[in-house]
Length: 242
Image (cartoon, rainbow, N blue to C red; front, top):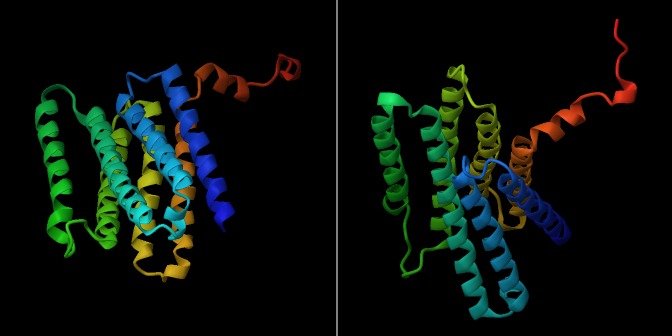
């Protein structure tokens, strides 16, 4: 099973790197929040992997102190990533809906939603007896943030479908983001229902949905000329004129 994890992690890193390269070659100014999110994902994954390799016993539990630091770094980064995903949905929703006189009120509403989402975990979930929060707090917070992001992404889809002049590239990005946050929300919710031995099921589901979402982003940012070349028939196989 460990090899399945490694394979999915490598595939996900390659997909994220491909998204970053395609963004930098194309509309990185238009989707600058997405660039920031992808860069954070890549750097944090590399940092956690390096920490695990340098402190080999931290993951297996042989080195208790290193294991505690690895867990803290892992869960802290997990929540940071989920916050970034939530903010990304909010920014894309603002981009798709704010226009003309609606810009200020929509911005205030979305800003209020962000404040509520950031405050709720501290009000709803038990922090724990120690200064550092327990794992269940991180799990519940990630589930809440991804569930909220999935709902907001549905609103984004609705806004894009209602707009006759919708941006097709933004629509594809929204689909990929929806797959990622919905898969994460389901995975975190499923973790509460399974035993420790069966945790690999929601974990693999989470990694597969992330890989699917980032693959959709690659499709969104693939150069238009190259995309048309793959769809158009080759000159030698072109249909003869009628």
